[in-house]
Image (tube, rainbow, N blue to C red):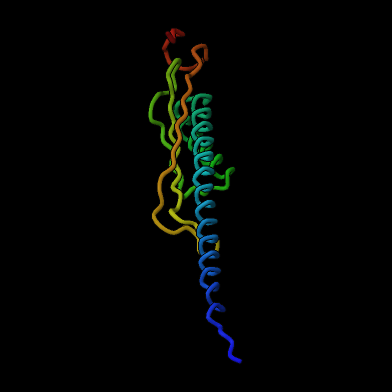
Length: 147
């Protein structure tokens, strides 16, 4: 009596293909979450940089305090300083001035747990603005007419 084994191996490649789809799908979801997390970190860094600049006591140390506050915010979100960029795009430290900071972080194109980040990646950025208090003492000659 002869047995036919024609269907024995037929499901093996389907199983391997299913595992590959699962692994690549998981990597895709993890990388998408990394972008969302980087956007949250950039938003917090821009907010902290703007706040530190606006609340500085002098224009001499305002930029340094803002940059340090942004980098600490990135580190608080588990991001390194090496991929972070912070820049003031508008405003000065005088009454009624609108100060705008932009914070950006470069996210790797593909992040594999053991290997690390692959690819040049792309830039995730956020902006935040605040107005310097019109009644603040010790800042320039501009009057409290923010109208």
